[in-house]
Image 1 (cartoon, rainbow, N blue to C red):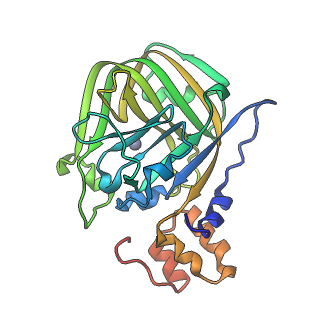
Image 2: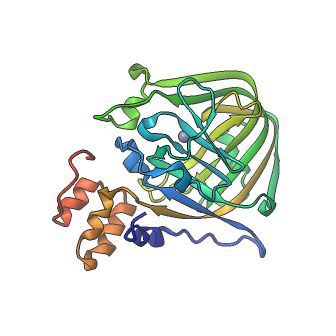
Length: 281
Ligand SMILES: [Zn+2]
């Protein structure tokens, strides 16, 4: 993490307003912007050990998109294209990660999820308005589960929607009529598109640790959801925005605002007379 990245982190710190006295909030730490990943920023920028140092729950992707990352109760798993989870090497790097610091004892909001609840309906089970970042852990038995991983990519990287498009044959799906395990993830507000992943985003790990990945489809048979409000920060370890922050200090506010508004690195670089990184835009 560069010292300059604190500028953005501080700017993005989301002030989760308490719904009731005594509510717990979790610290949600994101590495890199979603936009950077979507545009093909697949090279790892920090190690698993660093990105998930204090993580209780988390998700991400591995270097070169070589598997989905899911952190369950403090253990970091990588689910490669085989679909078989393995404990992630601490030296493995990740281009994008979201981690949550929380102690198990902190969980204060628990909801029994009705049978038949679908992925689309899950967000509505969280009793707080969707302007808040929320972290969740859902454990139980599920039906019609489709999990996903993807094949390792090599440069030059394509944007993620091309990689995951059906004709590129890079996405690998695993379907389970019945599945038991833990889903972890986040619900981010729709604002600040480009920085965070808006809406609900879940990764899963089965109880037998034989399957996992990004959750595409799921229906709850029986499950208990625990969630807390999150205070989110973003750090930018790679230098593609970091060098923009090398611009004169009086531009930092505008650059920060541009990042928040999802403005591309190339546009920002042009606007502030900096050289763009040719491999990123
Ligand atoms: Zn995912």
